[in-house]
Picture 1 (cartoon, rainbow, N blue to C red):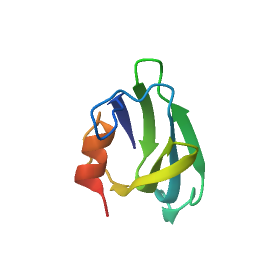
Picture 2 (cartoon, one colour):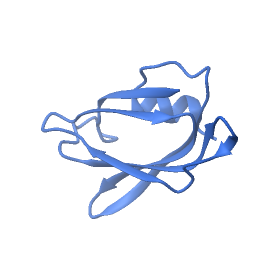
Picture 3 (tube, helix red, strand yellow):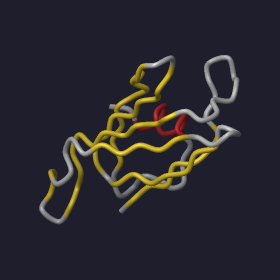
Picture 4 (spheres, rainbow, N blue to C red):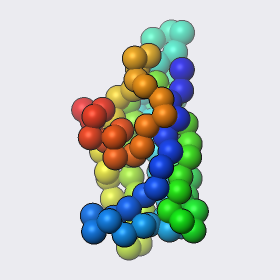
Length: 99
């Protein structure tokens, strides 16, 4: 199962973060053999000129980072399973599914 993550990325001052990279690192994923599979696999996407993003994440535990001022800042480590609703925004994902 995958979860769709979409929305508009804003900074703590509610300013849109255009053309900003979002990186997801799989810490563990669920598959037919249980945990495993894609540990340490890294994927990234970038927001568009309006700060919009749209991507999917597999079930499992993942670290979410955002590239700000020439460095990656860890936004949270989250766990998704078969009961996780879809779609979600990054804020909801980090606020509700952090470990």
